[in-house]
Image (cartoon, rainbow, N blue to C red):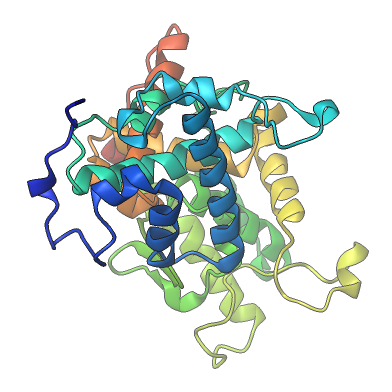
Length: 357
């Protein structure tokens, strides 16, 4: 009789939300247990359906390999990810795409973390596989700005803002004020383009220097780094001059220019993501940064790099970046370390040093 690798006595009521959420049940009926667990998570129905299909395929692969879920090893994860989907027609069978690999890694990390809480005596195989690069597939490396590029961006925010403020009619340059603030909240507060849609005036606390975004199933309270304060403050001041200052505090922080081009036909104040990307690229071009690295995501990653260099903990990275789990923070650390290793000159900075720009 094969000995189990878990201790059933560790399955406590602290982790069990229903009578069937036990390690024994997960081993004997992984898909059924997963569906019960999934029902207790706060996912949208469409997301839950995708996860249900993904996990069912993983369980089918384990069964074909003759493995129970409590015997899964880190080496099994890339083997599964490299395995074509046999449920598709032969002409469409191929290994997991880069995006699918990342989705699987994140989902399996959460599942095995839950199994660990139920008493599974295994290091999280999905987490180990992720740290070993299994989720990357053929993905391009995570992009960061190097130290020199970072300094150029921070300096441009400072000098260009000073030039605009010297103008006799600053409101006429409101679009550029807005764009400088866009760059500031990406590299200086770690926001994503998707966050900007929900960013309203009452999300920003300039006194305590943080931005808080709270939505269903999502909370993000990011620290605003010192160099980003002035560009953001200046834009908010210009915005008050452009709009009725008595308008509610839940109005958008960033809005589109409807005075020309296709924007004249727009029915919403919100900026389109493609427009945000173009505006970011335009500013980064002034800093001699172009190509695929001239993107909002690169700026957000660089915010994470600044925090890491300043000694931020995984918990702080999760809070400031709005990450779902500490594994995402650890993955950022690994990617950043790889980025620094690939460069001849190490990137060493700190939040305090950045604030002096």
